Every structure is written in structure tokens, then in C-alpha cells.
Length: 115
Image (spheres, rainbow, N blue to C red):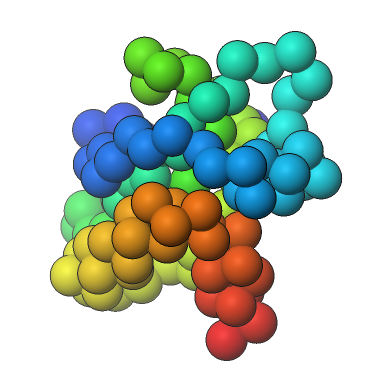
């Protein structure tokens, strides 16, 4: 597996995980038993396209993290589809920040996957 491009990794938020979202996290592939995942790390990531000229698409990723922001990049809770516009990715990340603060991130990401 290729290491992510942290040069174009923009952390949007580190927000405590609410009880509803924690239950959803425990039922997901991103959950690591015994891990101190207490926060969501929401980020916009650049995905370099395979072409001679450097060009990026953007995605929003959500990782369970500890209170210091340490996370496992191999186990995201959610990754969006690639988007051509960084503005679109930033807008989506901001909506996830709002949902996570309301302890509604799990239902918001499910709706996003369906759309």
C-alpha cells in the first residue's frame, strides 16, 4: 500500500467522538480494539494524478485519532470520492465537522456514501 501524500494533507479538525459515533466506529473496519481513539481527525487530502504534469484531485478522509491527533492512515473511518475542486472538498469537510460536533457523523457519512 502506498504511503499517503502528507505534503497535501490539510487537517480540518480534531473533535471528540460522541457516544453515538463511538458505537458506529466500534462496528466499522476502522476500529482497533484497545486503541485510544477518542477524537475524529477530519482532513482534506490531495491525490496526485498519474500524469507528467503534477495535478491533484481532492478527497475528504476521517480517521479515528487519540487526543494528540495520532491516527492510523491505513484505517480511515471514511474516505470520500475524489473531487476536482479543493473548495468542494473543504466544504464537505466543514459539513463533517458540524455533524461530528452534534454526534451525528456516522449518519452523515452513511448518507454521503449513498448519494
